[in-house]
Image 1: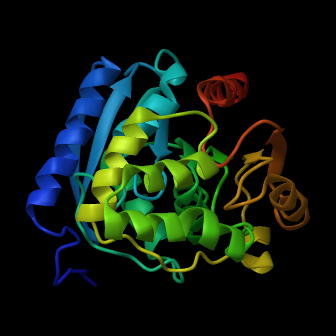
Image 2 (image 1 turned 180 degrees about the vertical axis):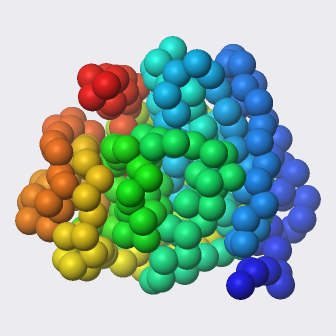
Amino acid sequence: MRYFNMESLYKPQTGKAEILNLYNQKLKDLNINYSYIEVQTAFGKTNIIVSGNAKKQPILVVHGSNGCAPIALETYSELASDFQIFAVDVLAQPNKSAETRLSMQNDDYGKWLHEVIDHLKLVNPTLAGFSFGGLIILKALEFKDSNIKEVFLTAPAYIVNGNPLKALFKVFIPMKRYMKTRKTKYVEWFLNALFSEKDDFALAFLSKVLLCFRMDFTPVPVIHNRDAASIKTPITLIAAKDDLMFPGEKMIKRANKIFPSLKQTVLLKQSKHVQNTFDNKRISNLILGAF
């Protein structure tokens, strides 16, 4: 089956160029050597940025919702000497991949990620993902996990959800107010609820995304116990104690019950949903320490 979008996710189309300008500037600011690979999947064109050490083992990193590959490259920058890093632009997000919006309710995301892995000819890659990227990785493991070496999930979606009323008042209402008034203070309000430290790029990028991109507000599902029990790939779970979206302690409690392949859990006690620079380095050290 082939998937096609009838309507662009960008509003107006000029918004796409503005968002991609920010994407390109972020990539430039990382000051790294990189190359692009574009693969055609049944779900649409997928863009991947390749960086790191080509002589080392592969790690595929997956960014969160309303994000892009340069953000993931920054998050896992400490791995550049010890891995060849493949940072994928997730479909239907404000980046350089196709605008095909997949369902979180079936195995499309898992099939798509395996197509990417197959096109790249990655042999037993490690996967690392944040937030929505964690959901995508878990979907891939549900679909087939025999060719994946190990995964590292940071504040992942798809295991537990937070209090919807808190998310409504602290995140979604400020988003809607910004979209109506275009007052930056509302973006700053919800970023403060989600981010452990101030992030100027996130402010600029999400301010543009909210105005120019059709975001997906579909409720995030949680993995069924039987599907979690079928996963054999080792999982390291990094949860954030003050995570409004996916509360850390609640997440670790459920993960310990449902994942037989859970290798270790870490609770970041000073972290909101999005980690600060110190915790990102700590996460990279966890990955490096596993090899």
